[in-house]
Each structure stands twice: as structure tokens, then as C-alpha cells.
Image (cartoon, rainbow, N blue to C red; front, side):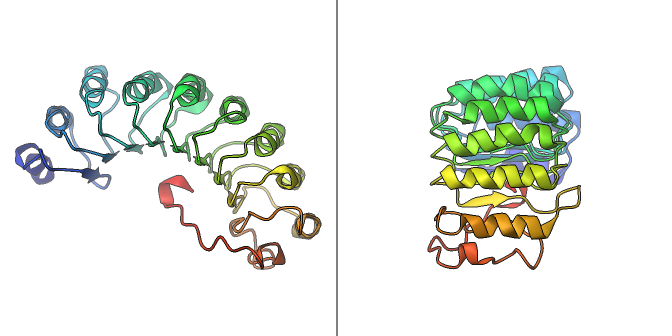
Length: 274
């Protein structure tokens, strides 16, 4: 309550970044926050966690307010109890804010339907660079909808679909995107249900990619055959000169010689985007 009051009553005209991702608001405070956002003409980054977004009147108000935030570049809804139906509101916000560079709905159960709703907005957006869909209950169909539009996308640099329910069925779409998209630099698909065959299929696509720097395939929910993966990595040496981070698959693979002569250095992707 103290934080909500401070935001509402504080000097909002100079605020550039608003992060309330560790605080829970009740319905009344959330509506007050919406009104306060309308008085932040310079706001560039908003990160919100644990809000009562299931209230239809609240989401409509949020769309109305954020659509006027023409300076907004980064918008995060983390663990906000969003469902697929709320992605219509998120898509409206994306359509209205042409300078938006990052959208994140990590930890919300939007499932496949949410991906179907967001995909056209992502495809049409002219400046979007980061898309965070980690831990959203997404299965193969929803993921494929996202990967298919990314094949020809030339703006998104980082896509996170980690900690979902992707299986070998999605591997072909992932590999196809890696082969065709020559713009993306970071892709997070770790903590999914991709087996060894799926991971190998994805890794082999790296031979045809010249831009991907970080491919997160760490901590899969199914056991991986590290010997087969190492053999595939060996076959890629000299064929791919950009990858410098594959995530922590295991000590024997982490820091593999595939990366030894790479000069891209460390690339950090924060928690919500991994």
C-alpha cells in the first residue's frame, strides 16, 4: 500500500522506469496505478508482477492508458495471472505503441491460444526486439505459430520460450526458424520436453545460421545423451562461427571447443528472458 501510494502521489512527470515486479497490488491499488501511468509522459520501461489482471475493467483501462505512453520501450507482465483471453489486450497495446522494443509475459498461463493471438501482433510490429514467453504453459501448436512468423522476421533479436511443454514435434519448426532467420541473436528453449533427437535436429540447423549467438538448451525435462550431442557439436566446428553460449547442458559440454575461438564475449540474458 505504501509503494502504491508513493507511485500515485510522487513526481510522475520525470519517471523513466517503473519496476513493481516484487509487490502485489489489490484491485483498488491497481486501478489507481493505471491512472498514475497516464501521468508519466517520459516512461520507457514498465515491469509489473502479481496484479489482478483478471478484472476486465482493469485490463481495458490499462490498454487505454498504455496506448498513450508513446515513449514506452519495454513492458513486462510477470506472474500476473494472465490467461489467453488477456492476450487480446496485450496485442492491442503492442499495436498502439510503435516504439515498443520488448514485451514479456513470463509466468502467465496463456497456452497455445495466447500464442495464436500474439503472433500477428509480433509479426506486424516494426521495432520489437525481445519477446518473452517463458513458463507460459505453451505446447507445440502455439510454439510453432511463433516460430513460423519468426522465419521471416527481421526485428526480433531475442526470443524466449523456455520452461514450456515443447516436444520433438516442435523441433522441426525450431530448426526451420534457425535456418531461415538470419537476424536473431538469442533463442531460449531450455527446460522443455525436447529429447536427444529433437536437440540434435535443432543443433544441426546451426550449420546454416550466421547470427545466433546464444541458444539456451539447458536443463531439459527429459534426459539427454551427451555423447551424441558432443559428437554433433564436433561436426559443427568450422561451420558455425557465431554461437558462444549453449546453456548448461553439462560440464562436459559447457565451454566446448566449438566456442574456443569465438570473439563475441559474454552475452547476458536476464531471468525473465532466459
